[in-house]
Length: 486
Image (cartoon, rainbow, N blue to C red; front, side, top):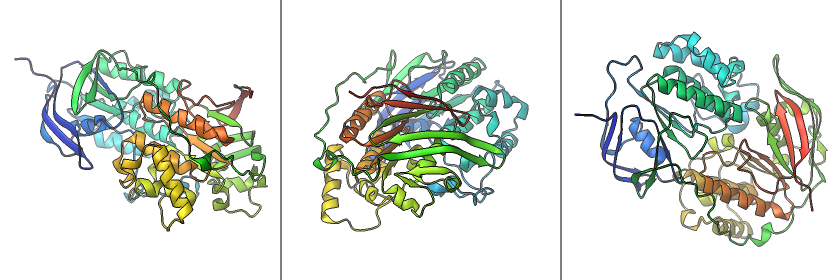
């Protein structure tokens, strides 16, 4: 009798005491490769982790590995975000630690991480080198894990997975943080390992997929439903509530010069990350910052945020003041609202939705003081505006990713900042959530707020963006106006 490769029967699973999978039944046949898409919060990641044996569940999951195959008889799950550890096995880093010099020997290098993984899995190192080249990751061999951006961490996990070639490879949000060239090359590599017998299960809503993907499904009401293709919901109209009155007022600008960099250079030893950067951002401008992985975008933003210690050694002006003229990092952060994948990593996991939003007043990663009445009222107004009333007392980490990003956006704009920095804010969101998020950005920035937005996907950007700066290998390649003010 024909036996499927993967057989799931009566699967029940809860996430933070909420049932997400209910008596789920699914069979994946030998040779099939799947994409599971659909709305954030429906249970896609929970299903993937259950199949990989990473979380408890009720029901039956059976995998019939090919005993004659040379491929490892295992399931490998590549998570959407990867939490690395230092040499002592600790993962509780703080956000600015990535840019300080004291941590130089606290984490492994990329090369050491791969050498250790190869020894653990019995792999030949010469087989990983073509993968590193294809994903543009060969130059990161000497980089510390803590120095990597979210996109670079994603690449490292993909390199390991493609090198191992398990019989079942599950990748959650495979294209998160990857530039266009890396996405294209990843699909080629996935097709190659599929030809060798690897079965793929991708958790995503992307449309540019490997050609080996032949089956599609979504989770609806706790059940897995096969579909002909991933259905786009981005055309649906999204209702926006009226913006709170305190955010209709323009920001109070301390200077018309928000950012000015003059021949800025950043070096890590012999490695030059930024080379002779000249860039000006004026009050009210809306900028798109782009560039391939490793081009220096995160380092550039760390200078603007005040997080990078080498800012003092450069001619850098923030909000009209030269960096190093007496202002503290907290003086700078009072002017800025920030979302980034890395910041999301390090956010306080014990904070509720209400506390997370309120912490934006004080630029902390949790709320550690009592709010005065006026500020509490503003938090309540934002909770209502973002449709989070029923969630306000829940832990931020208990929410689906899409709602977590809305909470962080609310936190980011609570003080009506002069500068809003959104570093790939829509990573992992479905098409409808991305559209809704960018509509909110357009409306929130209509009061004259300055914006720096980082995004790899041209089709997933706010419409208010006026100017674009492109980095390549640490250098400015393009500065252009893409939308004239009217």
